[in-house]
Length: 106
Length: 114
Image (cartoon, rainbow over all chains, first blue to last red):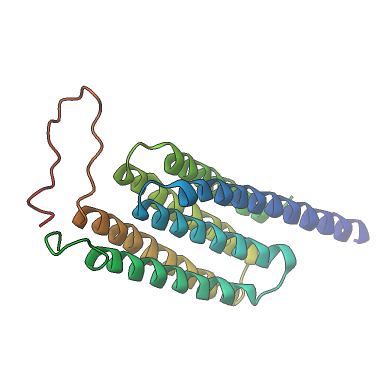
């Protein structure tokens, strides 16, 4: 019985380190996406890259919830998703209607 | 390793692979419109896959409704943001990438951008 409990504990730790590895891979991808956010040729490229980085951060937060067993991080992830949506939609609407050189493009 | 951990781990692996594909598409595509395609879709699918894996990992608890809300928000906002950003680029008249020596002569926009 004690042996089985120990085995289950070992599996739990192994799964947690696996989740940590997945989170690290996704965070590395987010850093790669920052290349497009910094050097993107247009404003829309930067906006899209920021959106992608936000999505990856959301998933990393969800993984961190189960790595550290802190259940309240899920609420943080929810708020992060809402914030990401509002920021991207508002900025793209702003780019669509304002910030022009003249009226002809509207 | 129990079966539940195996299923959760495979869902996470699939999600990580889709995230990597989305990053490659975002970095390597030649045009803004073609960059929009892989990054938006791969992020949606990878994120929902990881969230499904976490639902399997969490078991029957109150984490599942919260994860489902996060997945619904992800499905909602990823498509919406992709459409909004692409629409802003189109309305601003961003030129479409053409293959050098390709057969398409002119961009499809022009009248529609005004």
